Image 1 (cartoon, rainbow, N blue to C red):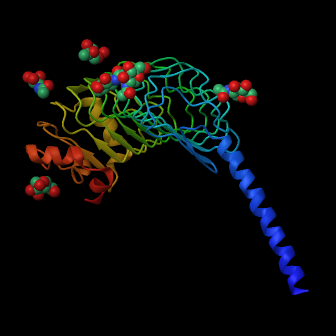
Image 2: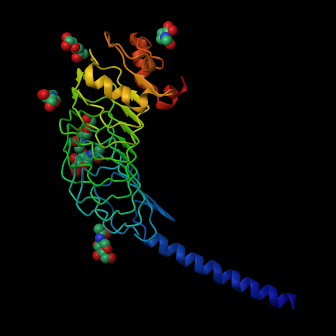
Image 3: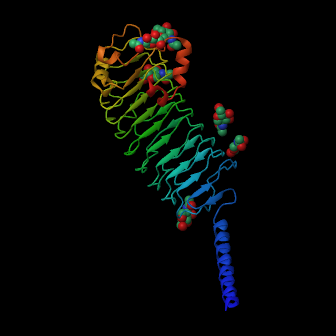
Length: 304
Ligand SMILES: *[C@@H]1O[C@H](CO)[C@@H](O)[C@H](O)[C@H]1NC(C)=O
Ligand SMILES: *[C@@H]1O[C@H](CO)[C@@H](O)[C@H](O)[C@H]1NC(C)=O
Ligand SMILES: *[C@@H]1O[C@H](CO)[C@@H](O)[C@H](O)[C@H]1NC(C)=O
Ligand SMILES: *[C@@H]1O[C@H](CO)[C@@H](O)[C@H](O)[C@H]1NC(C)=O
Ligand SMILES: *[C@@H]1O[C@H](CO)[C@@H](O)[C@H](O)[C@H]1NC(C)=O
Ligand SMILES: *[C@@H]1O[C@H](CO)[C@@H](O)[C@H](O)[C@H]1NC(C)=O
């Protein structure tokens, strides 16, 4: 009796091993050679790939890592079949160009990383269809221009990183991002901020324009930023912060306790008392402190 049962059990175990072995082989067969596939995730990082590999199983695939490759171009419809994808990493891949429609079909994408590439311009509605995108990282490219329609349709975007580029925007490309919470345009080539640049950004909590070439801010530059709590202006070349600029700042949430307005080398700016109580104009005026401020994170700054 015990012998018979032990025998039967071992047969079942053998059969199961066989089956799982088969499905494992299937999974390997469905995974491109250059990649490692796990349930929901495909890693194709650092393989010197020149194109998105063919044969990545589309079904159930949520995270795709293509960072550290040599893609140069992201062609239109490159990810058309990956409708379940939520995270796509294309960073560090020598990308110079992304064709219009490159991200077509990615209706569930939440996070897109294209940082550390060689892109010089973004034109067309390149991100159209990414209705659920929450985070877009364009840091450390060579972007000079961002055309006005580029961010259209990113209704759910909350975090946008454009730092370490060469952007000198004159077209107010950010103004339709109604759900944006964090906008980082640190270390670019902004010369001025036009009026109504951030007009519809009613939920923006943090705006970082440190280390640009800002000489002046136009009237109403900060118009509409009703939720702004952290504004970083330091390490620019601002000489005044006058008239309507100041008025829109004082009318924003920045005048509430716990908010922070960071600027440096802005003599002659006479901030109203309720603002200056949590604004320290002299704090970062020595060179070493400017350096420290540029490097510090939002979290660190929030502490004081
Ligand atoms: C990337 O590919 C291009 C040709 O497509 C080649 O000239 C270049 O050397 C490659 N770069 C690297 C780092 O492999
Ligand atoms: C998408 O799927 C279709 C049909 O399964 C296939 O013919 C096509 O090659 C796939 N496209 C890509 C880019 O993988
Ligand atoms: C991308 O930029 C880096 C840094 O400037 C440069 O070394 C590299 O040659 C560029 N690659 C391409 C493909 O243009
Ligand atoms: C930057 O933009 C301003 C305003 O449009 C323009 O006057 C200036 O020439 C631009 N600078 C560069 C270097 O493109
Ligand atoms: C800052 O502005 C002053 C006055 O316009 C100018 O002389 C100086 O060269 C500027 N400095 C930088 C770093 O742009
Ligand atoms: C502003 O910062 C300077 C330098 O850190 C400090 O000496 C001064 O007490 C600060 N002022 C206020 C009002 O916090």
